[in-house]
Amino acid sequence: MVDERPFENVKRGAGAFWLPRRKWRELVFIGALVPDGDFFVREPARPMPVFRDPDLFPEGVRFRVIFEDDEQVRIERVD
Image (cartoon, rainbow, N blue to C red; front, side, top):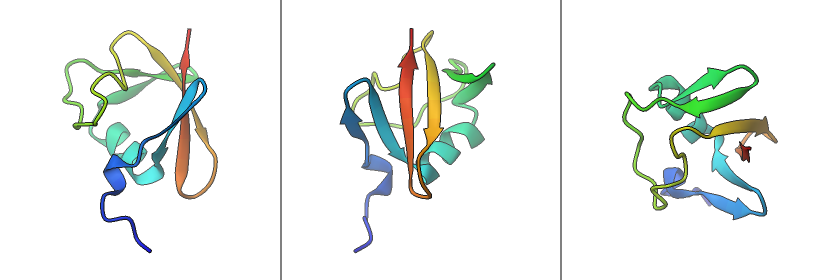
């Protein structure tokens, strides 16, 4: 069965959350998240697509991105 709302598919776990890979590609393509060394950071000058949790990608936080499979990307906040 195909998910009819793939961009709302945020899964949460201990210390991480998962996004569909196509949502991740969108965030990088529009420049909402940009590389910062081995991590990614929010680019405050670019609009962030709407998520149910508006604090999913706060400014000033670095994120580690792990490509787990063809469908999902694990994202961890880095202190």
